[in-house]
Length: 283
Image (cartoon, rainbow, N blue to C red):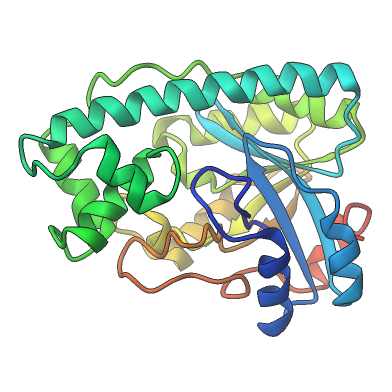
């Protein structure tokens, strides 16, 4: 229930190919949630041909959290506002990428906008910069190692700010347009804010939380295993009434941060029984 097609900035895989891979890997259903972008509604037709259940939605970048919304029946006014918001997030993220590239050039002169953009096949998102350092320049054995270097050298300090919405406002939007809200990868949020945030989001009517997620493979900076983080996610939900979701965060060709293989849909997820709460958005 957490994959991205090429409509998301960090991914390049066409939506139809993503669905085909999902079916080949034995999935019964898949959720595609584009990062700060609108999904491709025509994919429902291809999914039906594959006899694959499909949910389409958006992963909203918010302050201290990412909130996935599935089954959104957006008005023209909503779409116009979101288009402006997504364009702003993209512009600010690109500014951060450019600053990071400039700082990295003192370590390796080939790390420049032209080379990273050519490697990515699009504007250089910060994640593609790290991937370029690992896969093209072989400067580090993994993306986690490259990320640690950037953090230790404070190359990512004082980057241009991202002006993101409050997650409560996004949950309210999702519900207003008939959708289902899910807190994605909760342990990517600042550690000191996780429990207060859980209480706030639950009070706002959060529907689900991503309990199954490959943190180690997706750049989680801590030392805990995925299993420990999953158990902690369950503890976060104590005294709340939320369902559990999960997924790989497949962003082909971005592979796991700990090695250079590619991650495909089907490596992580939830059972069809656990997905029963999502039946109204899976078609």
